[in-house]
Length: 321
Image: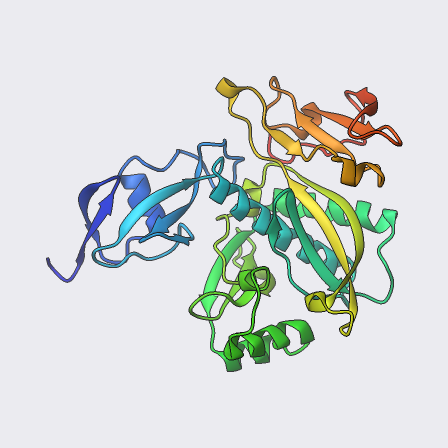
């Protein structure tokens, strides 16, 4: 094989590509990448990441000779987790835009959404959460690009000198003492930082210690919702500082042929007491959060609704429809 060529495998078939080809370019060239702009809202079948030799990678990942490449669709479980993780970054950026003194904890995707922990002077109030959600939507609409770069421990410490919890995670990685949720920050073989870049100018808008992968662009987050906040001890120990944890979720895009996808999780018996809202996408407006049904649990019930309303201006607005 010439030095400027790579032999890779896509969908069980061998392909020869140019050296320096990214996973996204390979998938697009092989017809495996759904035609969608990184500045448009993708459907559930849009390819937003890749598995390379079984490992999840950004579409910008440069391939090596012999790599086996598979597409990761946004509608898949892995794609949903990546999208929610990217939404957690957007939420952390929004918080630091509004509260510049906020220090970052961790922000993993979880079963029904994502959360991010912050060290702030006082607890977040309802108005704070509303402002954070509004800022998140602005960041989504801007189509900022997620860009991965490898850093040394020393470089990461220098860049994140004002983030004490990130510095602690860097030290824990070196000692091999990180848990599953912390691994989204420093669980990779190498230490990496993700930059959020302005799509037009390339200007750095925000950055975070993270192993990835992420969506190519914030614009590919279909819709976001800040759900609630609570206190949480750093690393789960009451001996550590209590941080403020904000929970959010991001809507999975609809598959028209199979009915509806859940946008926001329906309340269970465990969440009914806190009157957690639920959202369900309308089949007729699959990409629009404005086409979702909003339900508030009836007090004392296990998932009943006191009202179901359409057309309310308080619903999350569609960011990419």
